[in-house]
Amino acid sequence: MSAEQQRCDAVLWSEAGLQLLDQRLLPGEETYLTFTDAPSVARAITDMVVRGAPAIGITAAYGVALSLARHSGNSDWRARVDTDIACLRQSRPTAVNLMWALDRMQALIESTAESARLAKLAEQEAIAIHERDRRDNERMGALGVEAIRRLSGDGPHVMMTHCNAGALATGGYGTALGVIRSAWREGVLQRVHMDETRPWLQGSRLTAWELLREGIPAVLNADGAAAHIIREQGVSWVVVGADRVAANGDVANKIGTYGLAILARHHGARVMVVAPTSTIDMSLDKGELIPIEERSGDELLLLGERSIGVAGCPVANPVFDVTPAALVDLLVTERGVVEAPDRSRLEQLMAGA
Ligand SMILES: CSC[C@@H](O)[C@@H](O)C(=O)COP(=O)(O)O
Image 1 (cartoon, rainbow, N blue to C red):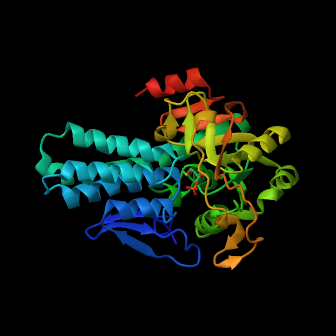
Image 2 (cartoon, rainbow, N blue to C red):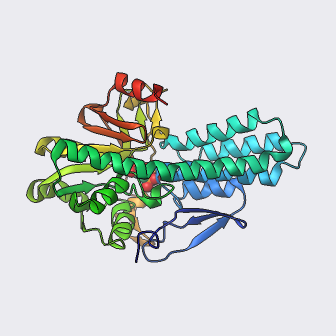
């Protein structure tokens, strides 16, 4: 099957409304749920029907389009749409792409005089955000491979990834998995090791699903096996996505990324973070200021319906961590590659077109 036939769209927009591939059911079941109002879209984001920073932003943009389609005929449409946007804004705290997309939709609403056409314009804006994300991912794929070649030769290299930063987490193609896809197509990848990514299992359920159906050599490991595998298998690149990058280059990503970056540094592997500029938050000085989502302890105590822990056991379940910029070798964005990201390099990047 061709890569095009293998596309796995997390987010689809149709006459019927917004369709989201229910990622809670993968890899066992491929079911799309249809949404026609913003509050249920916000719930779907909170409940992880859709997840991954860029996909969350795209979904929220469509949520605003749904809100306008529903309310723009009413005299109090503005208040209703504002309530919907506030609800979407609170659906998850860490991925800044959500706030970025909502700010963009809000700016459109504020700048458009023709309220009769707003619903249509909002739909077009959400589609533009979606399509742009996919194109940016393809560009980052090419830039990432170019950087790998420049810094470490043609390989083929053994890589490691964490969580799922693939087509399922974006408008398509993926950020970290976009680089891994491009590396495979260009013969630069030998194989990729995938962390299982406890507790939600984005690695074993989603990344493995995406890569194996395209025939990309990928091997699953428990998170705790990462150090051993990096050393024994000669991993030379750790390639991950991001949920928010602070102005000084600190990177919030799925819990476990920080530990992986320390392991990489110890073993001489490079860390590549792949993220569009919509993930960079220049309003936050440093990583400590990034809000870290804490989810229910049931994610550790239950496996589906089945109890796998001691009932009542206190649980800490922060689902993101912050990797200090000093541990990041490369930040790949659609605007270019930043080596050893820091404040001045990010300011330069963001000031560019
Ligand atoms: C391109 S996705 C980048 C990140 O959003 C990804 O690595 C991640 O941490 C996803 O977390 P999730 O909790 O599954 O939304």
